[in-house]
Length: 75
Image (tube, rainbow, N blue to C red; front, side, top):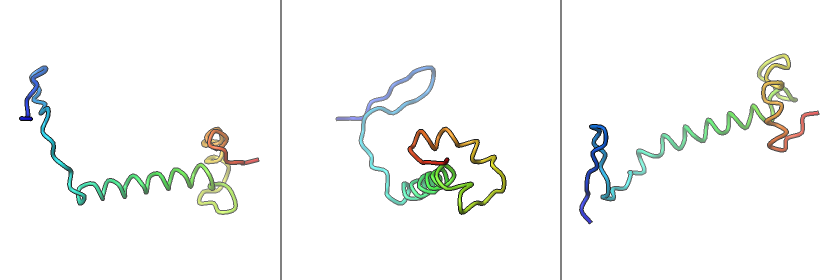
């Protein structure tokens, strides 16, 4: 099937045609996304516990409801 084009509001949007994204272009974004997910998981699950990067209860109170929503006990 030949690729067609759609013109909407003077913006060229290619429609159709199948091109694969090379693995080398996806890998950095996949690693970045995984790193962000692990950092988020650390702050929601572990921060302000036995291993803590920040003193005080600020991070705990910030992610408190998220902990309960995800099933992590905190008190």
